[in-house]
Length: 85
Image (cartoon, rainbow, N blue to C red; front, top):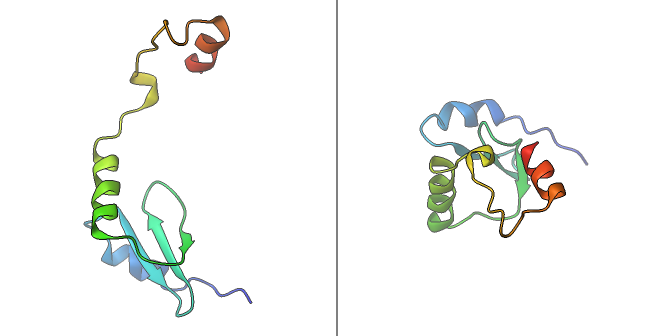
C-alpha cells in the first residue's frame, strides 16, 4: 500500500531554522535534508548528537573542486583526469 507523504508542506514551514526536518503521514516517518536530498523514509529517530553532527557537516562543507590533489598519492594520469572533472 502506497501512502502519499501529505504533511511535507507543513514540515517545510516548520523547518525554516534548521536545514532538515521530520514528517509523517501517520504510518511512515520521513527525514528530509532540505536543499540537499529528497525525503527518505526512516525507521527511527537520530539522537541529538547525530543531528548536531549533520548540522556541523553541512555548515563546514567545502566543494571538492577546492581541494588540492596530493600527487604522491594520486599522481598518475588517470587520477588527475578523474579529479579534474
